Length: 424
Image 1 (cartoon, helix red, strand yellow):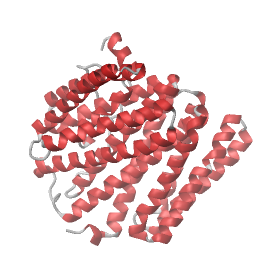
Image 2 (cartoon, helix red, strand yellow):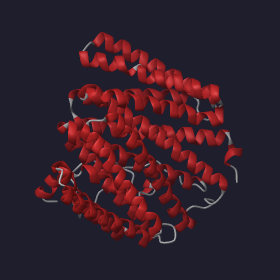
Image 3 (cartoon, helix red, strand yellow):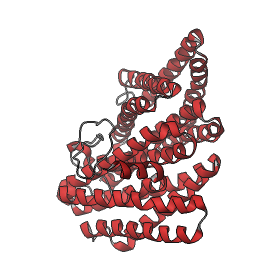
Image 4 (cartoon, helix red, strand yellow):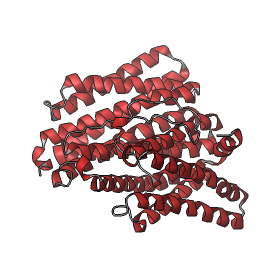
């Protein structure tokens, strides 16, 4: 990629980063090593970020559903972060954009698993063109030039249609143009909407609009999963059974809940240190995710258990505040006390999970799992305090991978404990 093209992407990729939802990632079993963030080139071969996948029988559909959700949740996460950084935190935009661009390489590599390298390369070209086509859109919007904006948006949506039609050409029975074209158009429109909110600094509204966009992305991920399973039936034995579909739905939902936990934790920590205007709405969204997680446990463990888990998770978030305050104040004594309290709460969460499902979530698994989560959160939080965004992303990635492992552990435990709910 030329320096000129790179410069254009850095300046104007904001609204176009969400375009990659026109494509999809499949199981990352063939992509099992993380790659350090680097500037992309059209012809360069890259290794995709891994996504945990099981391969036996009906579980393959659940694994694919989980992998798809994580890849698209990450795409949304880094799109939102890039937009916000572009407008409000220029020091972070380079590393954040690099991480988002890495997602595009991950998508191309995962796409090739099912459709071959040529298709992956074609997809990459379409995606890069789509990013470049966002340049005049943002230029016209900033200049308040209605005529130029209309022309630029028309070109951008035309490219989105090309991507949608490319998907249709690969899987016409399951991804007809009547599905892919409006799906892409809606995604682009929603990205523009929350980007405008961020431009205005209206964080409360940006989160409202972003949530709608992410829900749409999750629907797209599920549509793509279902299309792959239908097209490659021999690779997914038993996937048509009701039990397999219920397991896939649980796996996808669990991944999204915990990916959002990570996404909004990272955003809240960053805002706490660098963007006080955003910290209130961002923290509120993080707290809502804890309620959503508790609610997800209610169908299996009852309202009382769901409420107790919610309470423990809300405390988990609240007890992070004195940790951040002490770190910012460079108060070693206060930091040690706050961290001890935070680890104690993590153990309470772990032990509560064990009490719900001792066979599948023993304390020997849940306690170190939660302790690792706290340790990793502290690590990337320190990076953010320093304003070292490159290192914060390097340290955040394994933390999110760890959380995905935890989500899968919870999914597998529920399925094992309630086999009749996933039978057939």
